[in-house]
Length: 145
Image (tube, rainbow, N blue to C red; front, side, top):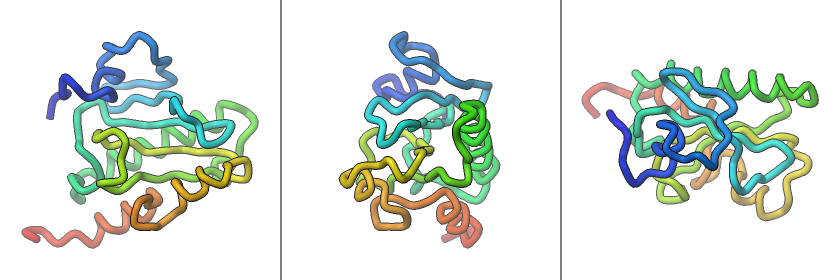
């Protein structure tokens, strides 16, 4: 899939949003800071090509999801201040997405999240799932269903 012209994350990933600082990018993914951080460190990892959200994923996308997380872990480690095991990684579930382009959140430290952020990013609720929960759901995919 290509980029979608009106998608803000497609614009960022293709370099058409000069106001966003890219922290990491390769031919598959792009990482940048969330404009509304839920804690001291809040990063988003997106695929460079447009994927609407987690409901559009299949088992074939598992390597992409693993790469999104690994590069977020690398960014968190590069701060020198964070243990990535203490971070929250996850996806909002449609229709609870603010941008309809797949994006993995990395938020740390979790202990500094405010009350509202703790609700918005509450793990494994109907509106937010951890990356592990999404990967597990893809492992349970049965072809043809």
